[in-house]
Image (cartoon, rainbow, N blue to C red; front, side):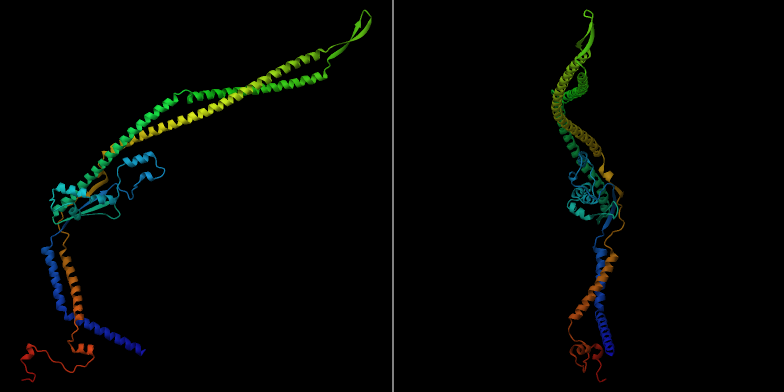
Length: 451
């Protein structure tokens, strides 16, 4: 515990000695530090007030009304996109990002237009130097663009800021006119080509429809054959029913004949002989049944023949229907293909015509006034923004004090000469026996012995 206290006391003593030495060093070099710090402040004030030219800043504020965060650079790459969307991507008015608007503000073309409009000296001003005078930035979380123009001439800064706004709007309008003109020419050429293809496709469709055995003729013939087949099928069913009826009648007559005797025996009286005798005669019922059976069988044979003929005709009709159906399906498919091509070209032509009209309307719109507007025009600045004389002097004071204080400590560290008894004791570890006083004017005229 005692050892810890002793170490703590020694550390405090070393800190106190080091701080005392630092204060002594600062006191030793204080005149140099103060003089050089004031000299730096004086030099900064001299430069700020008499040497450096004042710089003025004019501000203008623009508001963008048509901007997007992300552009689709390849519209045709999107899956499932229709013709109208593709044409719209060609004919639509450009919608730019805020970064694009900023880039256009600092474009070389706009700088040259400003120089030409203000008739600036080309030897002093060019596009590069003018860009260095202009600073444009987007106001955070807004669609505002703040443009700052700095110049030693406040009137020139104001003129450049205002002329830049006007020329920027004009430049955007001119670029829009160029793009819309190219779009109109493109759409007009495409419509001409599409109309020619449409005329060819329409003529070929008409020629195809006017050929012998066209779709209409085949469709009519197929309908008639279908009706014939239906009629034959209905008639065949009727005949088959009649055949069944006749077959049932024949079967019934045959059964009746089987139980009906062919002859009948009758008793007669012979007057000459005066006695009775028996005779056999044909049974009229049997004869009637036979005749009826013969008629039924003849009718049955006739109906069976008719049914066979109908079945043959129906089979032939089915074959013809299958042939007609195949031919009709083939020609109908060709006609539908030609019709789809005509419809596609017609829709394309209508879309191109509509987009051409929309593009011509868009071409008449002043894009500069519709997408960007001047919120605040630049006014003549009353005071320069730099140099900030007071700030420059304050910075010179602080920097001068820091630099020359550091320099004093560096010089003191580099000085390894022994000047005081304390230096000898600290560096050599020897005790000082005596000190030779320094001869000055005050002690030169007085004797050491009091004489």
